[in-house]
Image (tube, rainbow, N blue to C red; front, side, top):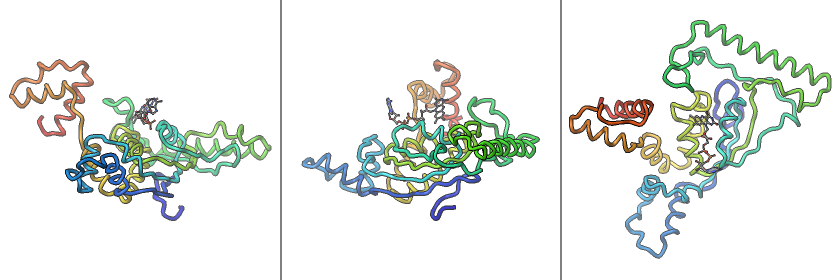
Length: 270
Ligand SMILES: Cc1cc2nc3c(=O)[nH]c(=O)nc-3n(C[C@H](O)[C@H](O)[C@H](O)COP(=O)(O)OP(=O)(O)OC[C@H]3O[C@@H](n4cnc5c(N)ncnc54)[C@H](O)[C@@H]3O)c2cc1C
């Protein structure tokens, strides 16, 4: 394990390489945009950062940048790289031989398909999870045996690697400004994101929290632990407050109704 890195899954890690800026840089950037005006009302740094976060005045958060080194399975990286607003350099399996490192899920993660959530896994661990874990291991192991055999034949590395599994680990450098990084974290720390990328997002979050604690607290309060109410949600909540039956609110889809019920449960209204 590289010094200072946070271990993620079985062979992965996240390491902070560099940070440019801090909470003060955000405040300084915000204040320059109102110089010449009466800035006394937002004179306190914490209050200003919290105001910016609440009202989505986002550009001051772009003044802070983070650079990470990450080692993650390719299926995690595939989701990760959908976030287009970062600068990335990934190791090349055309230039160098890949070490035999692949992800094998822990037994307690080998679960059934979730019923309510098409994208997720259930809470129930599969009966034969230990055997299935061995299968994951054996399949990846034999793919690597073939890979190494092809390399021994002097096959080009770019071709020899094409049948390696999505569980194979790769490494990359990832540079992202704080605004876009928080957007990434809001999506990838969420319970709807796949468990494996959440592990990495949680590790990133630890570094962000330490570097910009005031911004992080505001992010938790106004984004991570906040919720959005749709027009239909508000109508339904008004009805609940007035003691009326919920059934009269016409949610456009059953899914939206279910999402509202989830929010209402969180608010302990139902
Ligand atoms: C739980 C979950 C499930 C997902 N499921 C799927 C799936 O099934 N299939 C799938 O393909 N993807 C899926 N995604 C990926 C998702 O659609 C986004 O591609 C990903 O989350 C990156 O988000 P983003 O575009 O906001 O981020 P970034 O690419 O970092 O962009 C940040 C913001 O910049 C702006 N922006 C960036 N590029 C453009 C552009 N070209 N045009 C306009 N605005 C731009 C947008 O405002 C965007 O929100 C899933 C994501 C999550 C979190």
